[in-house]
Image (tube, rainbow, N blue to C red; front, side, top):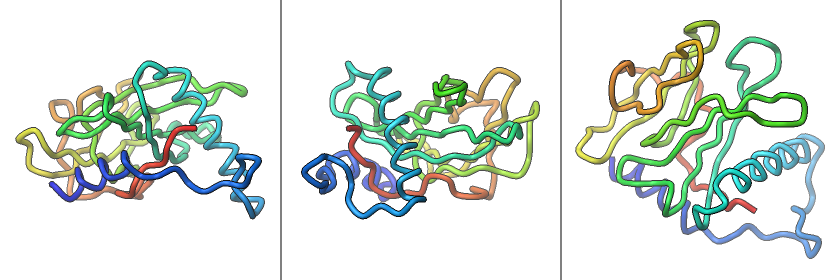
Length: 178
């Protein structure tokens, strides 16, 4: 339990990555460049929606949760004002044209975050780690209710599960929002 929390919070104190004088990462392959564009749009969304929350850090991943052929974005957002002993926030975003629209925001989530093969109301179930605040570390399955995923994974309708499924966001240090 403490190791996951320490890992998530350690990411909150990580130094900014080295960049070229232009401010852009150097030596990107085409796939890395596409990933950089994704990160910029996610980073921009986080900045626009949490500007008053101080220094922010994040990790993100994509997965087609609703089966429409366009991957949704999962953003794990950390920082002093976004995290507590139970974890940080996980935001599920849907692409609409060039924009990202929030589908769900879950609090008190620890890393790792995964996706399961099972579906609820046409969307794949998420698996998140919960721990801290008196809760023993374990993994829960979160089902889409037709409008979103449950806001608090520490209470029903979250269901304990023995698998994280396919890991989307591993338990690694977070990157600064730029």
